[in-house]
Every structure is written in structure tokens, then in C-alpha cells.
Length: 221
Image 1 (tube, rainbow, N blue to C red):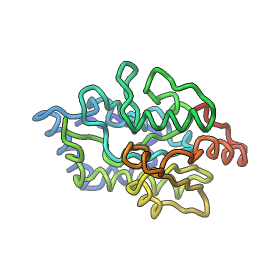
Image 2: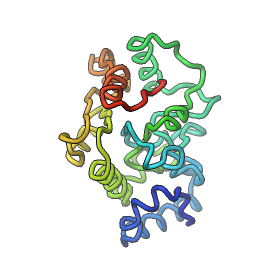
Image 3: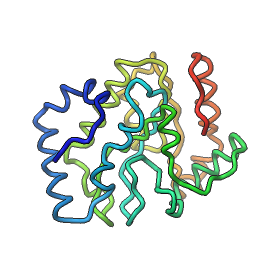
């Protein structure tokens, strides 16, 4: 399987990409895409990295799995292509954004314009079988994305990490809280949001305030 990953990330991840587990992971992914319908499209597996270079990263949002429904996953956590109905979690993200920054909920659920501004939209597992949530977990993706988080923590500073839900919060162990900012909230899924763990977190305005504090350009959410 060809590694469609930008040079900026290949450089900082060079040691990780040479490890035996990563080669095994790519072989597994290649076989899965040949034998079953998987998401996102194989060309978009590393899209989160290719739209946001290592040097550009100033905010990290951590998801769990790609969407496993037809046509939903586009390589960015929580994001969907232009013409796809907003999934429930994304709807709640936009509702919180509306409350926090008084922004009108957009028609498009494609969050690539966040990526272009330095937001790494990272799923912990980068691929999934159609209709089978979590089907590509424990194959090596988690080790790879943990390494990504650790390298960002080690080599950068003043990055804002948005940790939404229990799964993302576990990633805090990989992040140096003395160098970076960690903002916690419940997951935007209806199960969490409807129990009061999501709405009112104001993460979008808080992120921009932290960026401004460090003389870093804000995100046009």
C-alpha cells in the first residue's frame, strides 16, 4: 500500500514509519480495502495530516473512529463531505459553536477549512469497515496516533488540545500539560450532550483566547 502522507509528517514520523508494527498495519489495511468496503476512501486515510502540516499545527481535536456509513467519512474527525447530512455529533458541535461564537450553523459539514488553519482533525483509528464501528481498532492505528500526539507534545509548544469524551481524555497522558493547553468536555454525541456534558463548554472561544495570549493567529471557526 502506498503511503499517501505529506513530507512534513514523514519527516517527523520517520522513526515510527519504520517500525515493524506500522508495516503490518499497512498490510492489514490494504487487505481490508481489497476484501471489504472500508472508509474513508483509501486516498483520504491520511487527509487530516495532508491538509495540516506539522509546522502549522496549533489545535488538535481527537476523535475515535471514522464514520462507518456510506459516503460520510472524509479523513477528518467529525467531518463529512459537502453534500452529506450532518451526523448527530457534528450537529451538536455546530450548535455549541452557534452558542459560543454566535456563528450561523453552516450548510456544509466539511471541516477542511479548520484543517487549513492549523487544526489537526485526528481520529485515533484512521480506517473502518462499512457498518462496523471499531472494526479496525487494535490493529496498530492507536499506536501510530499516540505517537503523533507524543511527537506534537515533545516538539511543539502552546498547542491547544480539545479532548471531547472519555476516549479522547485518555490521550492526555501523552501530552505535556506544562507546555500545552488541554480543554476537556463531554463527547458531542447526543448520549453525552443530552445529559449536560457537552453544551456550554465554550471551547471555540477559549481556544482563540489561548492562541491570542501566545500571539498565534486565531481560528475562523
